[in-house]
Image (cartoon, rainbow, N blue to C red):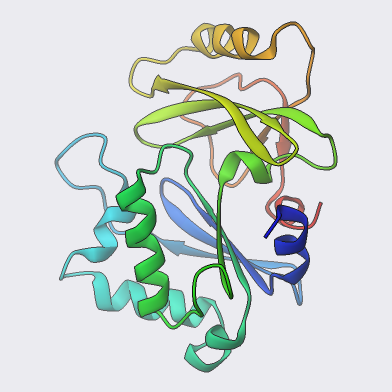
Length: 204
């Protein structure tokens, strides 16, 4: 399903950020914040991996189910999920399983996963998206709803000038618009481009 159709169908949209999961409800345009489990001692491990730990799994699963309207409603809802651009294949599958355990419908039928970058732009056929996680910044060239090129920069070493260099190299002198999410504060200052509010991510 293309992004425009998924946005139109979605009853709820979920942005998986570094510190929390944000749930946007189409009905009243409200946003709920579900705090992710605390970071562990190993650096560069996303906090969302903590949802599978025995100590926090049931509690977080209950919070997510509640934020999505309860087990009966979540089963009937169409849910659009924006996952980090650096998520691995196994992390993506595990997140899908977690949503299924929380009561959602089947992937690609009621549950739709997309990279955060492709959801940042409005109607432009081409734009640049900047996203980030605890591991890295991702600078992405988006064309017609798909990632055509992507540069990852290590979060612990990335400076504003490194981000600028990556944007210039992927822009090819086209002066494309640049977008990033305002869901959470970026790890570094001076992110170039336009901040996109949560509601706009899923309705534009």
